[in-house]
Every structure is written in structure tokens, then in C-alpha cells.
Image (cartoon, rainbow, N blue to C red; front, top):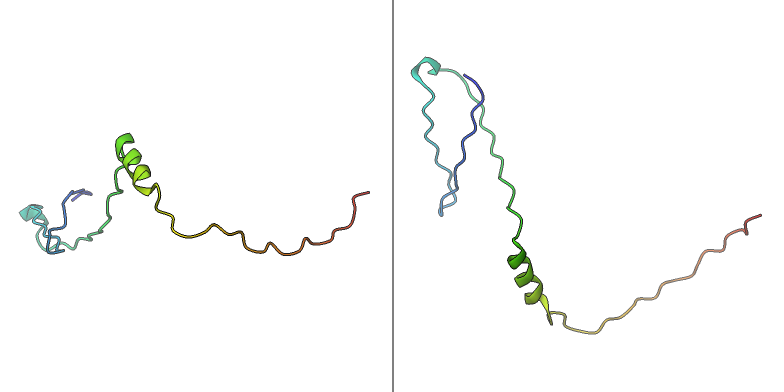
Length: 78
């Protein structure tokens, strides 16, 4: 039995159901299953544009720069 990759989708109930025919010759053998979520596909140009436009005007409040503190005193270079 070699490595096998099966793509599936989690159902609306949050459960992942798998039925994978392996073969009778492999009956009784132990297997390991790893759940690895697929990366989310990148946004299209239009999706990114819509996201950026949806953030316009979203900031509420004033922009304030906090106190920056004191500069440390360093020795002068020779």
C-alpha cells in the first residue's frame, strides 16, 4: 500500500466523512490519517479591489502619536 492523497470537504455539520476503498489485500493493516487543511486560494484582483474599497472610511476616532520618549545618549564617533 503506497501513499494516497484524497481531497474532500467538511460538511455543513462540521464532520468529515471518508469512504476510501483500499482493497481486500490490505485488510487488517494499520493506517495513519493526517488532516491538513488546504491553503486558501489567493484573492483575484477584483476581490482585492473590493476588499480595499470596503475599508475606505472605516477608521473611527482621532489619529494620535503617543509620546516617543527620550533618545539615548551615545558616545560620539572618533
